[in-house]
Every structure is written in structure tokens, then in C-alpha cells.
Image 1: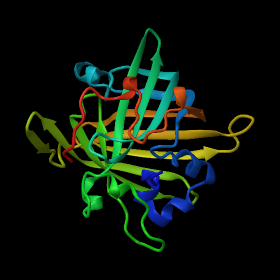
Image 2 (image 1 turned 90 degrees about the horizontal axis):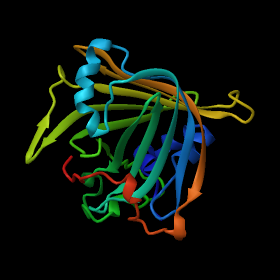
Image 3 (image 1 turned 90 degrees about the vertical axis):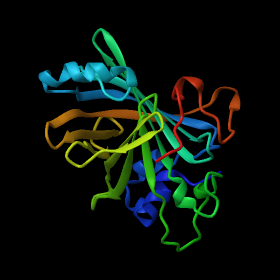
Length: 256
């Protein structure tokens, strides 16, 4: 079984995360299980009403959505797998249950092929680094069901053991074109996740994400808490490349 991609990317910092976060981000291809989170977003969506018609045009991408709500229930599934190019990956599929409509928001985070230069595209980048090695993987995040947007994902552990992530340096794929977005147009996503032992009877995971564009300001926000568990795949499926069809994108993208 390969090493979890967040551990590959964070190296020694991974052990500084809260133990519950280490468990959450320890899914690896071939484990035979997937993660299920169910909870409530205190806030979710686009607060700027003038921006919502533009986001409505992109809602079919399953990357952004025009609604905004408070106390909105949601469900997330995490699937660790090898993608069709052999890269160790984690696909997240979120269902957000707004009144009257359900929005799906999905992405796949993969180990960049240049992180395993000896055997690019063979999945070898997902193997464990030797003990004491300082090498760390580079993660890229493909957003939406058509995977037309990819960003660099930079991770760190805070002094109190929370996970902090920043998505930046976005690129668009339009057919054969690969278009890096200039800093003035790019939007960055700032995420923080932690374990709140005081939430509920047994503690809960909490997450907060803000997508900010320098010319517009806050584009998207979601923050809330959820319970999390592991479920076995039906039929005992445990092949590293397995991903349920409903969680797979409409197209895969190899370029980063």
C-alpha cells in the first residue's frame, strides 16, 4: 500500500498534526476503505449577490456554485486511488444540500509526476521515501468534473496542530491550451482544518475555506463541522486504481 499523499507532501510536519487529523489524511490507495463525513456548514457559498449570476454559469463544472446559505447540511466522501496515469491521488466529492437544490463540488489532489522523476507516471512517486529523507512530494489539485482548472497545493502544520493549505498558481486547460493565470486574475483558496474535542459529545472535525480573488475579494466561503468514519468498499474492492464511477470526473487531465 502506498504512502498517503498528504504525508508525502508534508514530510516530518505530518506528525505535528493533531492525531485525529493524521488519521483523517491517512487514506492510501489499496486500503479497501473510503472516508465519509456528514455535518453542517455554518456558512457556505457566495456572499456577494452581484457575483452569483456569474457563478451560475460555471455551476455545471461542479467547482463553484451561486447559492449562499447558513446551517446547510453536507456530505463528503474521500477516495484514495491511483489515477489513470499511475499517480497517487485523493478524490473528494462533496454534496451540499441547499434548500431546493443539491450542489456537487469535487476535486482530485494528485502527486505531481515530477515528484517521482525516476519513474514518472508509474506511480513510483507514491512509494515511501527512505527514512530520514527530506524529499517531499509536490501536490496539484484538479478542480471540477472536467478538470479544467489545476492549482498548486501548499500544506503546513500550525503550532497547535491544525492543517493549513493554500491553493495558488492556477492554470486553465482549454483543449490543447495550458493557460497560467496571472496573479491579478488568479484566486487563492485558504483552508484550515482541525479537530475540536469540545464540539459535541465526542468531538468533531472542523473546516474553514475562503477563496479570495485580489480584484473581487471573497468569492466563496464554507465553514462548518462534521463527523467522519471509514466505510469498506462494496464487494471488498481494494485494488489501488479503484474509484467508484459516480466519484470519477468526466475527463482526466495529466498536465499540471
